[in-house]
Length: 260
Image (cartoon, rainbow, N blue to C red; front, side, top):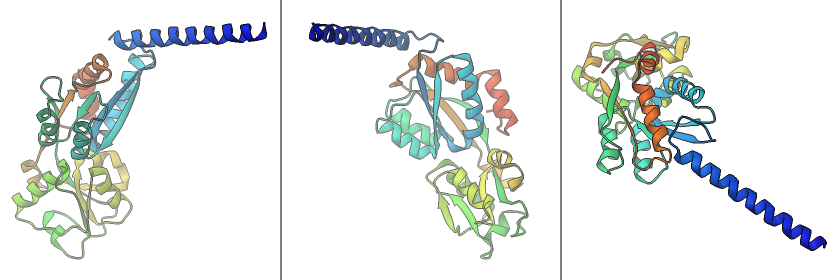
Protein backbone atom coordinates (compact mmCIF):
# COMPACT_ATOMS: atom_id res chain seq x y z
CA UNK A 1 0.00 0.00 0.00
CA UNK A 2 2.81 2.40 0.91
CA UNK A 3 4.66 1.58 -2.30
CA UNK A 4 1.49 2.21 -4.34
CA UNK A 5 1.04 5.66 -2.72
CA UNK A 6 4.66 6.62 -3.36
CA UNK A 7 4.35 5.56 -6.99
CA UNK A 8 1.17 7.57 -7.44
CA UNK A 9 2.78 10.61 -5.81
CA UNK A 10 5.81 10.47 -8.10
CA UNK A 11 3.56 10.12 -11.14
CA UNK A 12 1.62 13.20 -10.03
CA UNK A 13 4.78 15.26 -9.65
CA UNK A 14 5.91 14.25 -13.15
CA UNK A 15 2.58 15.31 -14.63
CA UNK A 16 2.73 18.64 -12.75
CA UNK A 17 6.27 19.33 -13.97
CA UNK A 18 5.20 18.51 -17.54
CA UNK A 19 2.25 20.89 -17.30
CA UNK A 20 4.39 23.72 -15.91
CA UNK A 21 7.01 23.14 -18.59
CA UNK A 22 4.33 23.25 -21.28
CA UNK A 23 3.02 26.57 -19.97
CA UNK A 24 6.52 28.01 -20.04
CA UNK A 25 7.01 27.01 -23.66
CA UNK A 26 3.74 28.64 -24.65
CA UNK A 27 4.67 31.90 -22.91
CA UNK A 28 8.11 32.00 -24.51
CA UNK A 29 6.65 31.59 -27.99
CA UNK A 30 3.79 34.05 -27.54
CA UNK A 31 5.79 37.06 -28.71
CA UNK A 32 3.65 39.34 -26.54
CA UNK A 33 4.76 41.87 -23.99
CA UNK A 34 4.09 39.58 -21.01
CA UNK A 35 6.82 38.21 -18.77
CA UNK A 36 6.99 34.51 -18.08
CA UNK A 37 10.50 34.64 -16.70
CA UNK A 38 12.12 35.32 -20.05
CA UNK A 39 15.58 36.84 -20.53
CA UNK A 40 16.69 39.14 -23.35
CA UNK A 41 20.43 38.97 -23.94
CA UNK A 42 22.04 42.11 -25.33
CA UNK A 43 25.69 42.33 -26.40
CA UNK A 44 26.69 46.01 -26.50
CA UNK A 45 29.81 48.14 -26.82
CA UNK A 46 31.37 49.07 -23.48
CA UNK A 47 30.68 52.76 -24.11
CA UNK A 48 26.95 51.99 -23.94
CA UNK A 49 27.14 50.61 -20.40
CA UNK A 50 25.39 53.45 -18.59
CA UNK A 51 22.76 54.29 -21.20
CA UNK A 52 21.79 50.72 -22.03
CA UNK A 53 21.62 49.81 -18.35
CA UNK A 54 19.09 52.62 -17.96
CA UNK A 55 17.13 51.46 -21.01
CA UNK A 56 17.27 47.89 -19.74
CA UNK A 57 15.49 48.92 -16.55
CA UNK A 58 12.91 50.79 -18.62
CA UNK A 59 12.35 47.70 -20.75
CA UNK A 60 11.96 45.46 -17.71
CA UNK A 61 9.40 47.84 -16.20
CA UNK A 62 7.34 47.67 -19.40
CA UNK A 63 7.66 43.86 -19.59
CA UNK A 64 6.93 42.36 -16.14
CA UNK A 65 8.83 39.13 -15.62
CA UNK A 66 11.34 39.86 -18.37
CA UNK A 67 15.01 40.37 -17.51
CA UNK A 68 17.55 42.11 -19.73
CA UNK A 69 21.00 40.59 -19.45
CA UNK A 70 23.89 42.63 -20.84
CA UNK A 71 27.36 41.72 -21.96
CA UNK A 72 29.35 44.94 -22.37
CA UNK A 73 32.81 44.86 -23.92
CA UNK A 74 34.95 45.57 -26.94
CA UNK A 75 32.78 45.37 -30.06
CA UNK A 76 35.23 43.15 -31.94
CA UNK A 77 35.28 40.61 -29.11
CA UNK A 78 31.49 40.64 -28.84
CA UNK A 79 31.10 40.14 -32.59
CA UNK A 80 33.46 37.18 -32.46
CA UNK A 81 31.48 35.59 -29.63
CA UNK A 82 28.29 35.97 -31.68
CA UNK A 83 29.79 34.34 -34.76
CA UNK A 84 31.03 31.50 -32.57
CA UNK A 85 27.47 30.71 -31.50
CA UNK A 86 26.79 32.70 -28.34
CA UNK A 87 23.00 32.85 -27.73
CA UNK A 88 22.32 36.57 -28.21
CA UNK A 89 19.16 38.52 -29.01
CA UNK A 90 20.53 42.00 -29.83
CA UNK A 91 23.93 43.36 -30.87
CA UNK A 92 24.84 47.05 -30.57
CA UNK A 93 28.29 47.86 -31.90
CA UNK A 94 30.48 50.95 -31.72
CA UNK A 95 31.35 50.78 -35.41
CA UNK A 96 29.99 49.51 -38.74
CA UNK A 97 33.21 47.53 -39.25
CA UNK A 98 32.62 45.32 -36.21
CA UNK A 99 28.91 44.99 -37.07
CA UNK A 100 29.96 43.73 -40.51
CA UNK A 101 31.51 40.69 -38.83
CA UNK A 102 28.01 39.69 -37.73
CA UNK A 103 26.10 40.71 -40.86
CA UNK A 104 28.70 39.03 -43.06
CA UNK A 105 28.05 35.76 -41.23
CA UNK A 106 24.33 36.08 -41.99
CA UNK A 107 23.40 36.51 -38.33
CA UNK A 108 21.57 39.86 -38.51
CA UNK A 109 17.78 39.86 -38.72
CA UNK A 110 17.48 42.63 -41.28
CA UNK A 111 19.69 45.64 -41.85
CA UNK A 112 21.40 47.22 -38.82
CA UNK A 113 20.27 50.73 -37.94
CA UNK A 114 22.69 53.47 -36.91
CA UNK A 115 21.19 54.93 -33.75
CA UNK A 116 23.90 57.31 -32.45
CA UNK A 117 27.36 58.68 -33.18
CA UNK A 118 30.23 59.29 -30.80
CA UNK A 119 33.51 61.20 -30.83
CA UNK A 120 36.72 61.10 -28.86
CA UNK A 121 38.08 63.28 -26.09
CA UNK A 122 41.39 63.27 -24.27
CA UNK A 123 40.76 62.05 -20.74
CA UNK A 124 43.16 62.95 -17.93
CA UNK A 125 43.01 62.51 -14.16
CA UNK A 126 41.02 65.30 -12.53
CA UNK A 127 44.19 67.21 -11.58
CA UNK A 128 45.77 66.67 -15.02
CA UNK A 129 49.30 65.92 -13.72
CA UNK A 130 50.71 65.69 -17.24
CA UNK A 131 49.51 69.23 -18.07
CA UNK A 132 47.89 67.90 -21.24
CA UNK A 133 46.05 70.42 -23.40
CA UNK A 134 45.99 68.73 -26.81
CA UNK A 135 47.19 65.82 -28.93
CA UNK A 136 50.70 67.24 -29.30
CA UNK A 137 51.26 66.82 -25.57
CA UNK A 138 50.71 63.08 -25.91
CA UNK A 139 54.00 62.76 -27.79
CA UNK A 140 55.97 63.72 -24.70
CA UNK A 141 57.73 60.59 -23.40
CA UNK A 142 57.06 61.75 -19.83
CA UNK A 143 53.30 61.59 -20.41
CA UNK A 144 51.91 58.10 -19.87
CA UNK A 145 49.27 57.54 -22.54
CA UNK A 146 46.77 54.69 -22.78
CA UNK A 147 44.92 53.81 -25.98
CA UNK A 148 42.38 51.19 -26.94
CA UNK A 149 43.74 48.35 -29.06
CA UNK A 150 43.32 49.23 -32.73
CA UNK A 151 41.04 46.25 -33.48
CA UNK A 152 38.31 47.74 -31.26
CA UNK A 153 36.37 50.82 -32.43
CA UNK A 154 37.79 53.31 -29.91
CA UNK A 155 41.31 52.25 -30.90
CA UNK A 156 40.56 52.53 -34.62
CA UNK A 157 39.09 55.99 -34.05
CA UNK A 158 42.14 57.05 -32.03
CA UNK A 159 44.48 55.89 -34.79
CA UNK A 160 42.48 57.87 -37.33
CA UNK A 161 42.48 61.03 -35.18
CA UNK A 162 46.22 60.82 -34.46
CA UNK A 163 46.93 60.30 -38.15
CA UNK A 164 44.80 63.33 -39.04
CA UNK A 165 46.83 65.38 -36.58
CA UNK A 166 50.15 64.01 -37.84
CA UNK A 167 50.96 62.85 -34.31
CA UNK A 168 52.71 59.64 -33.25
CA UNK A 169 52.05 58.35 -29.74
CA UNK A 170 53.72 55.47 -27.92
CA UNK A 171 51.13 54.17 -25.43
CA UNK A 172 52.14 52.48 -22.20
CA UNK A 173 49.27 50.02 -22.69
CA UNK A 174 46.60 49.03 -25.17
CA UNK A 175 43.21 48.18 -23.67
CA UNK A 176 40.53 45.87 -25.04
CA UNK A 177 37.69 48.33 -24.53
CA UNK A 178 37.15 51.99 -23.75
CA UNK A 179 36.29 51.41 -20.09
CA UNK A 180 39.64 49.72 -19.57
CA UNK A 181 41.45 52.75 -20.99
CA UNK A 182 39.42 55.18 -18.91
CA UNK A 183 39.98 53.19 -15.73
CA UNK A 184 43.74 53.52 -16.13
CA UNK A 185 43.29 57.29 -16.10
CA UNK A 186 40.76 57.48 -13.27
CA UNK A 187 43.03 55.30 -11.10
CA UNK A 188 46.03 57.56 -11.80
CA UNK A 189 47.88 54.81 -13.68
CA UNK A 190 48.05 56.95 -16.82
CA UNK A 191 48.26 60.66 -17.56
CA UNK A 192 45.96 60.58 -20.57
CA UNK A 193 43.81 58.35 -22.76
CA UNK A 194 41.80 58.78 -25.93
CA UNK A 195 38.27 57.68 -25.11
CA UNK A 196 34.73 58.61 -26.06
CA UNK A 197 33.43 61.83 -24.61
CA UNK A 198 30.35 59.96 -23.35
CA UNK A 199 32.63 57.89 -21.12
CA UNK A 200 34.33 61.03 -19.83
CA UNK A 201 30.93 62.46 -18.95
CA UNK A 202 29.86 59.22 -17.24
CA UNK A 203 33.04 59.25 -15.11
CA UNK A 204 32.10 62.62 -13.65
CA UNK A 205 34.63 64.35 -11.41
CA UNK A 206 37.06 61.43 -11.51
CA UNK A 207 38.48 62.60 -14.86
CA UNK A 208 38.91 65.73 -16.95
CA UNK A 209 37.92 65.83 -20.63
CA UNK A 210 39.70 67.82 -23.34
CA UNK A 211 38.23 68.37 -26.80
CA UNK A 212 40.49 68.43 -29.84
CA UNK A 213 39.62 69.39 -33.44
CA UNK A 214 40.82 66.15 -35.03
CA UNK A 215 38.05 64.24 -33.24
CA UNK A 216 35.77 65.39 -36.06
CA UNK A 217 37.83 63.19 -38.40
CA UNK A 218 37.14 60.06 -36.36
CA UNK A 219 33.47 59.98 -35.44
CA UNK A 220 32.05 56.49 -34.89
CA UNK A 221 28.60 55.39 -36.01
CA UNK A 222 26.84 52.91 -33.70
CA UNK A 223 24.60 50.31 -35.41
CA UNK A 224 22.12 48.00 -33.67
CA UNK A 225 20.28 44.89 -34.87
CA UNK A 226 18.27 41.92 -33.64
CA UNK A 227 19.87 38.59 -34.49
CA UNK A 228 18.53 35.75 -36.60
CA UNK A 229 19.27 33.16 -33.90
CA UNK A 230 17.75 35.26 -31.11
CA UNK A 231 16.31 33.06 -28.34
CA UNK A 232 13.63 35.76 -27.85
CA UNK A 233 13.04 37.18 -31.35
CA UNK A 234 9.94 39.25 -30.55
CA UNK A 235 11.48 40.81 -27.45
CA UNK A 236 14.73 41.40 -29.33
CA UNK A 237 12.90 43.55 -31.86
CA UNK A 238 11.07 45.38 -29.08
CA UNK A 239 14.34 46.23 -27.36
CA UNK A 240 15.75 47.60 -30.62
CA UNK A 241 12.57 49.67 -31.02
CA UNK A 242 13.07 51.12 -27.53
CA UNK A 243 16.63 52.18 -28.39
CA UNK A 244 15.38 53.83 -31.60
CA UNK A 245 12.39 55.49 -29.92
CA UNK A 246 12.21 59.07 -28.71
CA UNK A 247 12.67 57.78 -25.17
CA UNK A 248 15.83 55.94 -26.17
CA UNK A 249 17.15 58.95 -28.05
CA UNK A 250 16.55 61.14 -25.00
CA UNK A 251 18.61 58.86 -22.74
CA UNK A 252 21.44 58.62 -25.28
CA UNK A 253 21.47 62.34 -26.01
CA UNK A 254 21.65 63.20 -22.31
CA UNK A 255 24.77 61.01 -22.08
CA UNK A 256 26.51 62.99 -24.83
CA UNK A 257 25.86 60.81 -27.86
CA UNK A 258 25.16 62.60 -31.15
CA UNK A 259 22.25 61.95 -33.49
CA UNK A 260 23.24 60.02 -36.63
